[in-house]
Image (cartoon, rainbow, N blue to C red; front, side, top):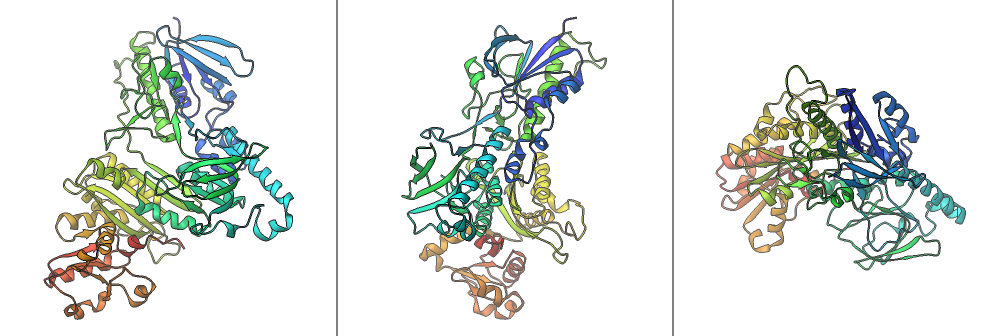
Length: 608
């Protein structure tokens, strides 16, 4: 019996996952992988930490070597081979050997496309020598080597200045600082784009003592998150000495005779003089091969597949970052560049290719009968990023994303220690839970903190995936020890607050709504804002126009408040405000609301 041949294009996450699964399912399939890079199956998420030096050896990033992987799973792996054309009707590929330049054809019975993504760039740049990307291991090596070269050049230029002010030959760290009143600033490293990869590299630049500036075109870092979370991260980065320029676009630049960018000019009239420019504005799906052969691609540039990961051709599948994925909450196609999704899709595609071959009679069928197709119905986009020692997690929709498609979108903001407050080492976690205020369905969750963000995000991801009601969180039984949790976990607290909301036991006003009221003086006259914290807390900072009425003396001071006016109460994190809310309601105050998230959500400065 002639073996059926499966060709896989691409050998990082989805491709190698598929190859290993396919071989485990059968020894009677010929499997060939074409990869245009020299490395396969590497930990791309670890590249920033190789650049920083936290991961010292490039070999530590290699999950599998070509030799080991090919021998273990009997694979024909061709590295440094670029597929240049797919002929789906005649089932063959055109391939170019990137080492020799030779071109040849190869035929397949089934094809799996896992071509991943390419980094996005700005069209007016001309591949200047100090522009760096971070997509492959080779990119990481180039970036790390260039940083080392930059340090050496700057040290040679002015060793004395280096000892006093840092390595920047243009200026000192003070030259970056507050740029609001400056027309020109200098920076060792300029990061264009404040998404995941740009922010993850900040640790690398900081470890190398590079003064760093970030330019972001939108109004916040991590644009897919809510500002209720990212504002804390921005405050944290500012305290780390990172300069963040938001609502800022590049309009032109200048390069020197060495083909290095020496100045960048922004839409705000600012000139930045960088030594290194890192492009972190995102990635785009590598769809050229698919598009050129008639395989359908979507509005976001990814390959369109069904839930079995099959394209419009019965014998061609696609998986990983190059495909568009159904967002299970918005029912919209998105590009989720997540290794967790890619590896799952690779496995599913392999199982379905195997079933296709088996059902065609080319492999002895399983005695139990034909297997059902494995399906990938979509994703909720669970992700996490670590910047220095700060973790930022998200699953499901952000509040702003949900509001666009669901008029019943609401949120609960809480601030809770990572474990019991009396046990040493507790760190505050700031959390936002997005839900449907009519049905109770959880729609999204975001968190930022130094500890346990992954745990909280994972719990909420499972809850969202299983379509849980937010009130059910109150009943979750979670592991507790003072060193790693609380008797009432923060997840339980979110559920209890939701129970109170649905039972009419509390009402909230969001910070942005209260700020709009204060800014508009006319409606502000109808409100009284009550701060129920202690005098020391109030003195350290409070909301404009608020009156101090500490909770423990509030009951005896109620005559100072007007029952007919709209009342907003707040404390530090929310609990004392809730107690005050119940007290005021019990004493006949008609219109009372708690400030959602209380003062920490108002100020959004916590990481000192």
